[in-house]
Amino acid sequence: MSTARRKTRRALADEIAEAIRLGAFRPGEWLRQIDLEEKFRATRFDVRTALNELVVRKAIEHVPNRGHRVAEIDVETLKALREVRVLIETAAVPAIVARIDAATLARLDDLARAFGAAVETGTRAEQSRINSDFHHLMYRLSGNPVLEELIWNLRDRARGSTLTFWPSHEALRRSDRDHHAMVAALAARDAEELARLVAAHILKDDP
Amino acid sequence: MSTARRKTRRALADEIAEAIRLGAFRPGEWLRQIDLEEKFRATRFDVRTALNELVVRKAIEHVPNRGHRVAEIDVETLKALREVRVLIETAAVPAIVARIDAATLARLDDLARAFGAAVETGTRAEQSRINSDFHHLMYRLSGNPVLEELIWNLRDRARGSTLTFWPSHEALRRSDRDHHAMVAALAARDAEELARLVAAHILKDDP
DNA sequence: GGCGATAAAATTGGCGCCAATTATGTTGCA
DNA sequence: TGCAACATAATTGGCGCCAATTTTATCGCC
Image (cartoon, rainbow over all chains, first blue to last red; front, side, top):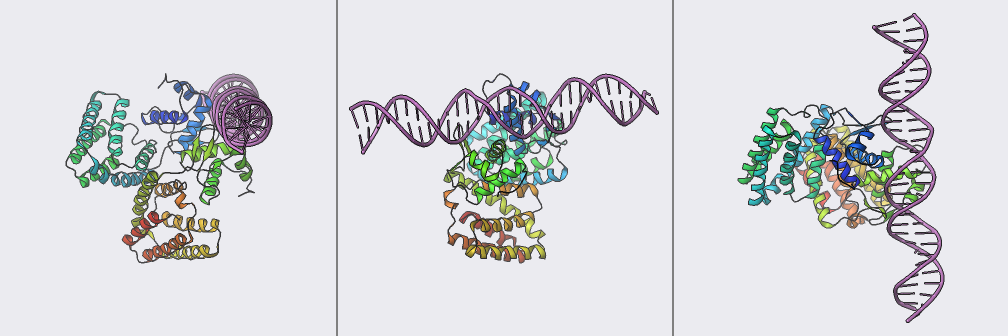
């Protein structure tokens, strides 16, 4: 997060988005430009551009003359967001089941196990990264890049929920069980079951 | 498109997006900053910010040191985009049917008729505006703002298709028939039929 | 001490300059 | 005439300055 030399604007925006995902900034907290300059070794201008991008992506909100912050989203919006996520992520399921192969299945199983381990002993960042890898790998199978990208943008919009900011250990273990159940459903080529699991995964709690 | 005094950045981006929708720029054509300054009476800085926003929204593409243009999207991406649109817009249908009321139905019918008239005698801009109003009104009924917003962003990403740039008169009349059929399906509270129509509307041709 | 007013510091954000790059025009040569 | 090399014009885009605004600190008064 520190020593990379030249960064493109998009990359910086993604880095900041990831930092938010990892909980580096809590909902409502101001993202001061000076801090971001230091933290990410970027120029002021690049920081501003990246923040702008995140505003458009609705990962953060902008208040004139105050700055940028992780928006605290209200329950209404959170509900709407989750509805759409369920819709889109379950819609991707049939294509995923149709395209799954043994190698990918094995890789998913590895990641599910790794997540389980990280829940017990790993850092927050590790958990987040493994979880992210797991879902990325799965949704990539949909074969639809637009769909895949949409899924990630929607995920980043729910970060302002205080509910999901500090996932309880219990919630993490539930996520772990969900992951393993998903792998099992994939192994059985059971689209219906996988869709059910995906929906539950989104509605219960985040990771 | 000319005399508005002070404009916010977001508004300018939307104005440019609308201009693209209306066909002011054809796919592949460069959007020169100087032209945009004049056309929209905005400062250079605002234009740049707006273009940036449109890049993030994927309505246009950016080529370093060359500038911005309406991206010519390939058939692969267009296919992926349409798949997602079908997915999302049909998903909105049940909620729409559940919430439709007489007043809105009458208003939709008016718009459908107005579009039919515009196809025969109106300008491209009028057709686009009425068509936009029709679909906006319909999707607003879904009661999910996130869903509604998503639908419009996805629509704007297909503008680079040369296929849909100059809709044939025949295609416009087909759209007109679709609109009336949608109103009929709504009047009959027939969600299945409406979903079928929406999907066909997207897959055949755009407006 | 509490509290409002005032001053100082910190932060954001609009804007313009100009270097880097690309596009266009011109000249010279085969 | 065709074409390559060069010169000139047009355009983009990085960056820094500073005004506007907000936040924090200080002071004076009740």
